[in-house]
Image 1 (cartoon, rainbow, N blue to C red):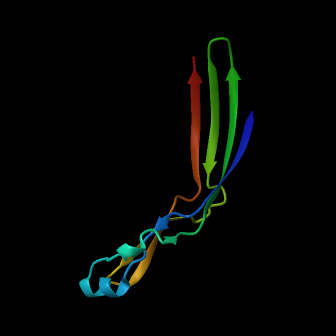
Image 2: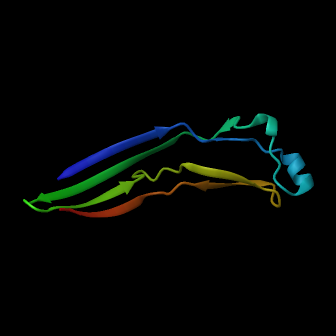
Image 3: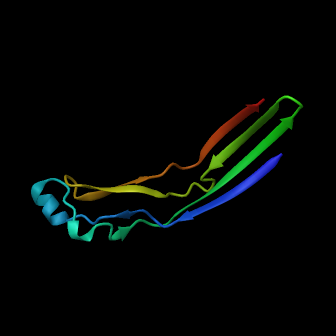
Length: 107
């Protein structure tokens, strides 16, 4: 039986600021081209847990397990978009807790 715990920490993704005033006038998103990638989202972090059980014989190895990604259900920013109609930003987050079942057979 194996139990693995993984911590992943990265700096947040970079993005370009939006000229809100000009975007409102033109009713489309306008970026400050002279400020490319100036801003950065919050740092990305997550814990992953893996529990697996392996049975080995002379000809075949079988493994059963479960991977649970983002164990703490942290809200990591995927993107933030500007809505010109509401004059507000809409944030889309990465996946929350994600359990993944595993069965592997090796000959």
